[in-house]
Each structure stands twice: as structure tokens, then as C-alpha cells.
Image (cartoon, rainbow, N blue to C red; front, side):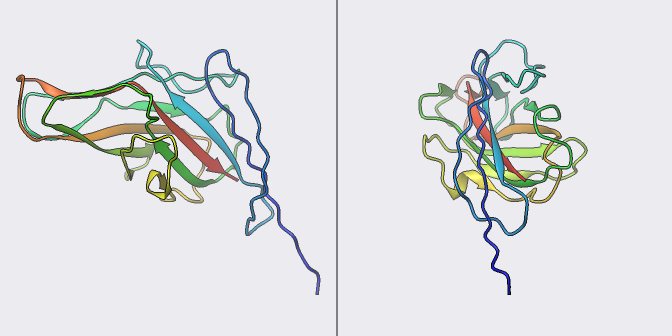
Length: 187
């Protein structure tokens, strides 16, 4: 009987203006012949909310995200697109998606408002994955979802923040998150 050894390559491409893509190799066991790769997308503060997370030079910027409301209860941010159609090769499949808010990121919110979750969906998808909002520099499994496992990875993803306004303090309350990181692992 032949003995098979599987190896994987993790390639983290940091997408930010003026920064070249960086690669990191590591051996990761996989269950098939495909190599597992990942791409990291910083979601940073810009003025234009219509910008996507990629362009042909593999650089990216997304805007800050925010939600406001005059009433109490659940609120959704305006959201933003992460377009990976020109970054991830066609026919690549999702392994997992990690999303979190780094600790040095500025977050503002009213006294009685919480930021609860990230909601992730892709263009044309009727459902979304929910990942708990976490401020951390060391994301754990609670920052990761495999909800989209084996779906196409090179699509336009849509990310929103979900929060709760428990009590109105100023008459128009809510939150603003000035940047988050999204990592798509694919094969």
C-alpha cells in the first residue's frame, strides 16, 4: 500500500495601500491534493464607502463601518463589500473565514449600545454567517466560521456589523468601528 504525505502552504497576503503581498509558509495537513492558502483583508478607515477590498495590484482599503438609530433594539451597520474576484483564483473554495477587530482599532459607541456580531454573506446568497464581534490581536475559533466551506471563494463578500441599542442616550445612538481584519482561507 502506498503511503501518502499531504502538505499545505499558507500564503497570507496583506492587502493594504503601499504594502506588497507577503508570503508565509507553514505545513498544514489537508484531506485532499489541494493546498490551503489564505488572504488577509484589512478593513480600514477611508472616506468613500463604495471602495472594494481589492484591485488588480492586490492592494485594498475598506471604509470604517457604523450604525445609528433613533430607536432601541437591534441595529445593522451600512456594511461593505470585500471583492476578491481578482485576488483569489477562479474555482477556489472556502475553507474558513476569520474576522475580528484588532485591539489598536478605534471603536466608538454610545453608553448603552453594544456591538454584537459580524454578519458575512456573499453576492447572491440568501443567508449569512454570524461571527461574534471581538476586539483582539489573537483571534480564536470564536472569530472563525466554516459556514461557507466548499463554496466559491473568489466572490464579492458583504460584511455588516450587528449591534443592540439598549437605551437612547442622545436621541441618535449607535457605534462606529474604524477597522477590522478579515482572513479568507481557501483551497
